[in-house]
Image (cartoon, rainbow, N blue to C red; front, side):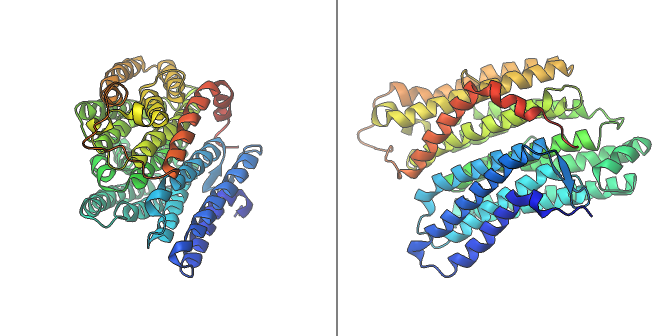
Length: 472
């Protein structure tokens, strides 16, 4: 077996940060739990440095060719670790000196680890194990507040996760029984000569599990409840980071295991993309709760990214489009949630009246992130959508690109419903809901908003980094 632990330094750093953090936190007094946060941040920084070094080496597979260290894995590592750092930053005002602060940081790191493992998995069994690792910590995080909304959200999240996890495991069993193996390389050779019906059932069941991770239709029902019921840092993490792993894992599955299968899986994924972007937009139109609006926004964003998966084997732009869009979406979505975290009393759109007069910096970040989610230049999501739409047209799915353009224009309506009172309405003097929570969530907001603009302006330099090979 080609064991090479040095190839997994980012993953090992997260494991070490979580385990050592739990040990350290069990001995530290509550007012010094911040040391565990420093340890978690250090683990992310070590992982980022190791990822940058790995990007300069040739792609390889490790541990029995079950895990790939290539362009997609390294890009996902970088995005996930950066997103985890941002989440740690915007969570300080919420969990600082909390009696379960240590557990929070450990769960975030384990969830990030599971997400990265999803991306690199080259075996269905490892994919299922990564699914569990990327799910169980998040169930606990959803109920971290131990209040009624959080408990309900955690229960719904857990029950749906179990359902789709069982479906995923059943699909793995069917594909193993049909193809005689669980590794992608063997399945790519054996599945084309087996029963189409059995392969279709297995692929649908495995994709169902990945749809749950990304919050795509029809596995999206947990998204608004968890986003509204969990604490804001958890909602930001859960609606952002798992999507990176699930979407990249779906891309790798169709490219590595299904390229020669006589199923029209591009049409299936195109239909799922259409359903996700359309339903997400329609449900967000008249939302008054800002968290639920962002929840349905994330569902619609899944539809746009799935377009790159639909043309994975048809366009050379698919992989760089997917990776760049994931990076753009991550910083932009986290920026919007950071503003929400900084203003915890502002739960509804009307509560943001006069934000530009009270906190012009936060208002600027909110405008950049919300218009960025629409796809307005020069933000990163604009370039991401442009490349995804181009890849979709090149992949002979022009109708899907037309649907996406229509949905993009329609989404402007509900984002403007949030921006308008923030910019053009006087503050409410009687009911002041724009009281900042602290300085760290604001720091996360400014960082994410700046990153969204910088990534959009530097897209010409970043995009080619995602064009490397998946495997050696």
